[in-house]
Amino acid sequence: MDIYLLRRGTLVPPLVIALPTEDRRRAVTFYRDALGLEPFGELADDGVPEPLRYRLDARTTLMLVPTGGFGWVLGDRPIADPGASECLLGLDLRTDADVTAATDRARAAGATVITAPGAQPWGFTATFADPDGHVWQLTAPS
Image (cartoon, rainbow, N blue to C red; front, side, top):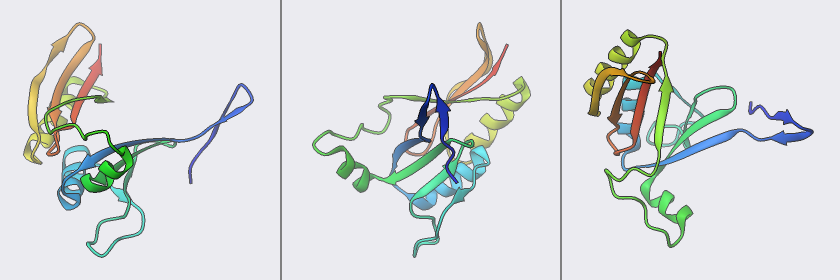
């Protein structure tokens, strides 16, 4: 069930982050193996929920939309080419070891590691691109 917040007398709806994907089955496997996310919803004929959604928290959902459908939503705007990053998705983890372990899982699941785990002024961090080229940053704040 979606949770609406009441802020200053106004209902704030849940947030959905939508990203294009070339291959729904590959996406299900990657997000399960790399980030431990399980999709929810009614299964389509291919055995993958449609729409393909992941609950990130009580109010936030990640939705992966087939590239053709994503293009339809954008209208005459082009979909960014793989490797072009218009946004950075981030996960805050608890420890440096968690960042390293998650990076290793992502690599094993098919991610391209962009920045190896290491200390930065803002925390211990790493970045990787999922199989569709979406960039994720993992950080254990200092």
